[in-house]
Length: 107
Image 1: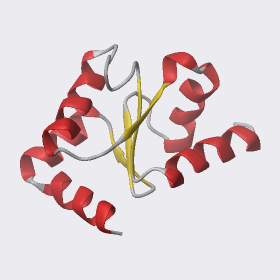
Image 2: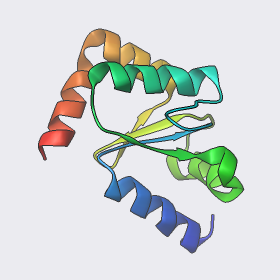
Image 3: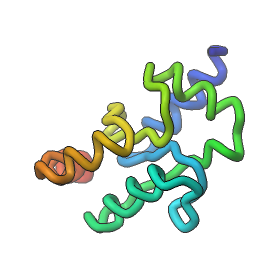
Image 4: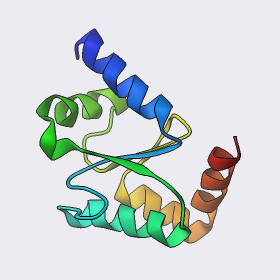
């Protein structure tokens, strides 16, 4: 990964309390896993931003290296990598995701 790409991703992650790297947009997710993440965050009623990896090949490849996580979507809360769709579903069901989101939005 180039230093420029790392800096681009760093800036995106730092500038947004809740950020999802996904296929498609929050209004039109283009894969089931990305849709799951959007639905969970919408259910929580929290503001979040998305990056459509289908629009940017560099980010699509770079984000996997950045997080050391092979799949998309990838969710970042308060600058920290949380995981993908399965992790989000699990944390949501346990009530852990709600706590992370509340802490992030309060800070």
